[in-house]
Amino acid sequence: MFVDVQQEEGFATEDFDICIVGAGAAGIAAALEFEGTATRICLLEAGGLEYSVESQSVYKGEVIGLPYEPLDICRLRYFGGTTNHWAGYCHPFPVMSFQQHDWMPNTGWPIGMDDVVDYYNRAIPLLELPDIPWDPVTGWDLESVRPRLREPRIDLREYDFNERVHVIHPARLGRGEHRQALQGSDNVQVHYNANAVEIGLKEDGGAVDGIRVRTFSGKELTYRARYYVLAASGIENARLMLASNGVMPDGVGNQNDVVGRYFSDHGIIHAGHIVTASEGVDIDLYNQRSFRHADVMIWHESTYESQKELGLAPTAFRMFKALHETMAMPGGESARRLGRFAAQGRMPDDLGGHIANILGDFDELARYGTDWLWNGTAPLSRIELELHFEPLPNPDSRVLLSSERDALGLPRVELDWRITDIDYESIRWVTDACARAVSASGLGRVQWTYDVNDIDPSVVMAKHHIGTTRMSDSPNDGVVDPDCKVFGIDNLYVAGSSVFTTCGWGSPTMMIVALAQRLADHLKTRV
Image 1 (tube, one colour):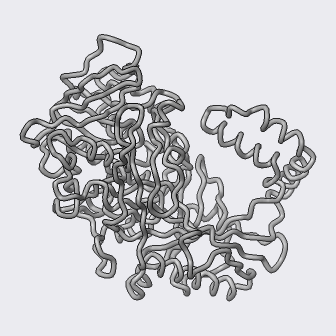
Image 2 (cartoon, rainbow, N blue to C red):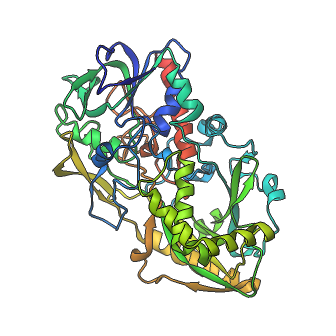
């Protein structure tokens, strides 16, 4: 059942068992676990069913730390959340990600692989992934996808790298069968255009009394349930908790000044390229390749042994074909952009301009397309290199509230993203090891395009917002306990990547869904 809070009247806002704030990957995954049961669920979506400029503008904020993409660009504020433009990368966190590492402060989850392994398996069909075996240590099974790949040109094992498979399928959780299931549900209600602006606490601060909602037209409502789940994203969960300071002056769950801290993201460096020794080198093992109804790609991850020996954070890199010069032309860029919009089921406002670009470069595009169809690939003389690193959990990297307010009256956010000395050393190590491996293989030579002595200007973000309400055994360095319940508040839980203790180096979406399903199972025992 779907309700437009801004337009409709007379709908229920009380007597729910669970109220979930946020209909992105975490909120939808949790709500679907209750579909068809006797549990009464209200799933609140701040945006509408489609993108709108008015709703998206609420995400504007200020970047005060390392350079970061504008905060209203790198996430989406409508039903389905950021899965609406998610690239689809899926990688199960390995067992090492949960462990405490003596050389890396603030690591170590209060849960382990045994606590999530069954939920990884449940996340696979929800994310519409192919049935590929996976292992808690090595991840997706390389040999299962090997028939779609070629033998490696570079053996990286002697350079302290493992091969890791990423499975890529951009499931749009706000569309298709998941949306239909919620729309036809008798016990799950989706209320959209419902902007949560305050977590209301009881006078003693020990429980939530309601979620206050405001629409852009000024309508105000209070939703009441037995239990509440914040699933509004890594930035917005912290923002709402910090802004709800009527009973707790420092914000809900922030008695130890931890809410908003430990913000993390996967750092990316477009590091350079390999100039190949000959034209048309086959690197299909490393390129993204189709596999069943998804794609697969190989990454090279520093081994656990090398991390421990050298005191480094987990790092990885991938190799992929350089963008052909034709696709860098205006017509090629427009063709790629239209393809991305089509995958999202929508069209850009400047459709006419893109069509004009394509027609202007039609001869070159046709020649490129013919070459691709005839040979199966475009000529290759250059291989791009991209580094990913997992930042060390850093309490000084954080989300703060600004003095500026948005159209709903909520304080906007300030993002102070920081990385540490270990992160810089890890990047330098990967750079050196990659160059040695490429040189020894005879594949070509590496040309780096960034300065290992001045890394900051080259670091970009994966746009994964992680860690602002982190999970811990203690409220001294965490916001939620191993069940994702906020310390000191009996009926408030948090879902999504904000509860991650560490962020891993791969995409967080599979872990987000698995933890949301695990939280749903815990709530079933309480309801």
